[in-house]
Image 1 (cartoon, helix red, strand yellow):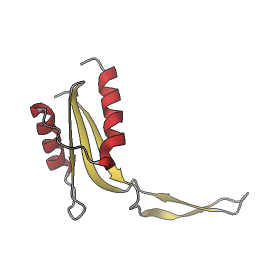
Image 2 (cartoon, helix red, strand yellow; image 1 turned 120 degrees about the vertical axis):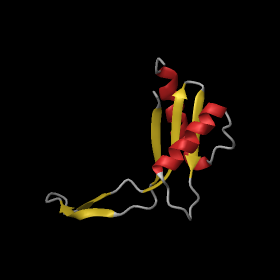
Image 3 (cartoon, helix red, strand yellow; image 1 turned 30 degrees about the vertical axis):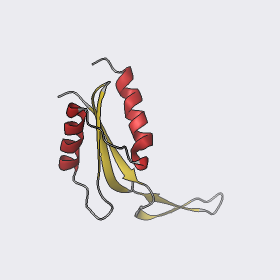
Image 4 (cartoon, helix red, strand yellow; image 1 turned 135 degrees about the vertical axis):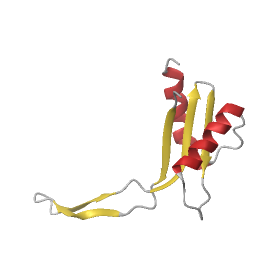
Length: 102
């Protein structure tokens, strides 16, 4: 199945990856951080069939289950109320889907 998949991360929850990196010129300490906690997925099956899935804050997000829910919503065209945290990524997927030749 041909689709666009965009995973959404909560960037307010990040972990440090590896040791700090020091810059000599400014004496500043730089660290690498991960993408954040995975909270949702947005799927586009065509330009007009886009679905989403977001986990509750207490749950652990499963990519497989989230993708299945998003695909189901896209097929049924039952979007429901889009959460605010997914709006920016939803618009990105919508723009990419409209430019793509399906």
